[in-house]
Length: 348
Picture 1: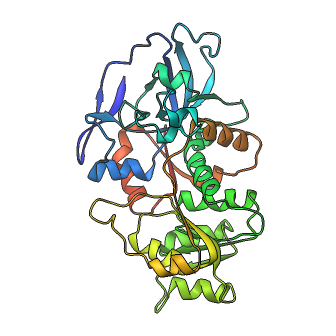
Picture 2: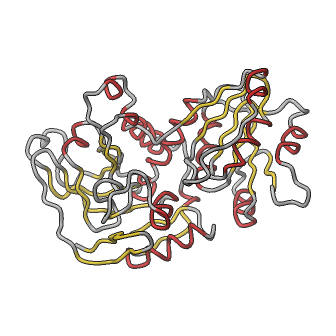
Picture 3: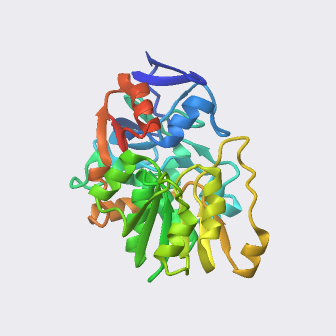
């Protein structure tokens, strides 16, 4: 089969490799759509703590089952349309038993530890199948929309951890795809007002065109101070929740400063090596009883929830899909994501 193989940092080749063998309880999928995640671009440029090379990247995947291993024929059949949650937990550790398998110490991830969706076919290993990582999708839901269930699930995880609820005023740093998804989900969870901070002119224009938020703040305006701007927009109260949907270190500091008393901030994105240590105002956190949450990835259950939300039409992701490319154009797709020249790029 044709696949995009990352052999080293910045070294990606399109080549023919063996189609995976489908063993006991595995499932083999013909990839119909795989979205480019910012993390894929990060791994191409700088690697990742969980990345094992050489590797076929791609973890936002939807496709059609072409082979079902023995032992799971009662659950799935050939031609089933499916979305895949990329996390492969052990299923038996305290974290898995407690319904937080994304914290599993033995977790492996499709597109990181084993081959992912930037290929014609992708294998879902038995432990993924047995732990609920394969979700059937209805005919009404396109493969492209279904492939975005995984980033939606990550947003669901983050927003639930920081308890977004009815009446909350929410500030989101970043108007990329994750910012858009977080804004939509925050609305569904009851947020009364969404404020978005962005510096990219292209993304500000796209956000305004698609009515992303009640207020969009251009952080590149001359003399612009996002904290001051948020305070002005909230009558000096600050916001209830801050979601940094980007990997900029200073956003964590600014986010805490713009929170109201008892506000919550969730660290959604990891920071690049060498930038992970951020200086926070301990006293401000103390006196204002600010709550800080970490959010990493998602669970297979949250992927199923995302598929249900998409299938019910509660989320709109069609407008986010701005580009479609072939596997041969994958590096071009990485460049589009890197330069903010695209929102969601689908590899067909």
